[in-house]
Image 1 (cartoon, rainbow, N blue to C red):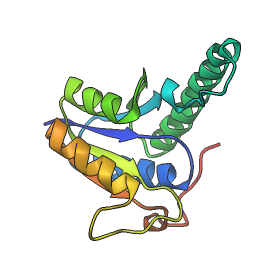
Image 2 (cartoon, rainbow, N blue to C red):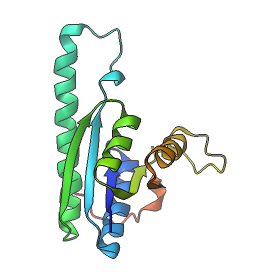
Image 3 (tube, rainbow, N blue to C red):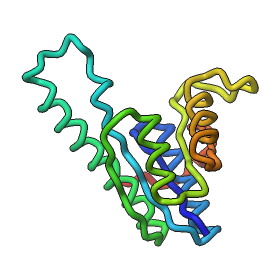
Length: 155
């Protein structure tokens, strides 16, 4: 049986995705890996070159922190997990990673304020469809309103 990858970035959508991935891992007895991608291309071209390395280091630190929080949430549910950080284009790195670990499920969190769209034209739906097509993995998009408000938050 394959593993579950939960790509995380922070925010309510990522919390919802983490909680859904934890529940899925518990009920299916599959390994759970939390993934964070540092995208150097997300930095504006107007940023001074001397600042880019420092900003990328901060993004990496933020990723490590968010992954530790996700791992604490899983620990609270008595679930052992792995965490990984990749650097590169988000879409390409997630796709490459799910292939590398032979994942059979990818869980993504939708940003707050997006709604399920039957035509799949919001950014998270397009990302999910692209990854499904290029990585042959099932993708679940979880929205913030899909989690129970009573879920404990790790800080």
